[in-house]
Length: 450
Image (cartoon, rainbow, N blue to C red; front, side):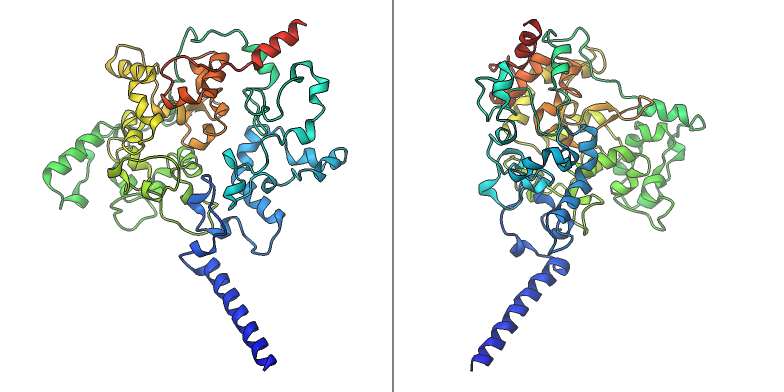
């Protein structure tokens, strides 16, 4: 009898294990495998378990490889102030007894909502203390500071200190609230493309081949033709077939996806797939996932009810034929986002500048749209070509990452640090002056004067 029950127990155990292994690698619905709620940074790909768990029995090294697969480039660009090499140095070996900082998962642990703090951290907010407990004795400026204020005092971020390190604070210490010339970088991608491809000839109405959509009502085809003629595509020799029937396609594609755009807009699509809108489509995701729509978003953000089924793609923000960047910069965002910060934009000084630019009352690049801050224009190569960064994560959290590429186009450093530290000001979309004052610049100036 004991042998029977023992055999039954073994059979059931293997059956259950086999079921979960099969589900992990081959099943479509993996929700029953989740051991806890996924953080907002990764919930979009939680059904592609093997993106992170490449080996179901792997340890921290396996998970570390998964983290760097997606985030290594970002850390390199930030000149990571706490790289792994710092903790593999024998001189710092004693620090690993407290926190094994060689591995991302030591701080950023998934599926433990009760332990996960803001930005995915799973350590107490005073974690800096464990390695830097002597800083209050060594630096007079740090003497009376609480140990949970390192990352909130406008001084330190664990990985990215580009806008907060002491030398930078010193150089920009006395800047006014508004710069003399408050403008965004001018986009030059189209001009650069035409300069590099002088053979390009603008297309006309006669170059449109509407035979593939002859079944559509004439009014609709006329609108498509009009929109295309007014677009940058027609100016740069991109006809209907270029998108709807590229060289590797044998049939007409009714609704081209991001892969069609990628042939010309590689940097933009790369950023799109790294950001919130397109991360499900990233090359690093282990299995195909459908593009996300607001109804799939399990975050604290609110969305417009009639936008819940809009699938995120290049053409959901840019009209597929008119490629209107003005619409993409404001209307597309507010067409979905219904949170307090987004709704307050229409009453903000930024929107007033945007309206005046669109009406011609202010010069180009002086208005501030949603995209100006969350998808900023940046120089992305040595030649100085300016592209729009389509990865919202690049300037999202911690929000101090916005200081250099966004805020300082128009504002002084001190104002920017204070504004980004004021939660109430963020909620009303910067309508007013900061009620918070971060003392980091004051400390730098005092230290230099002592």
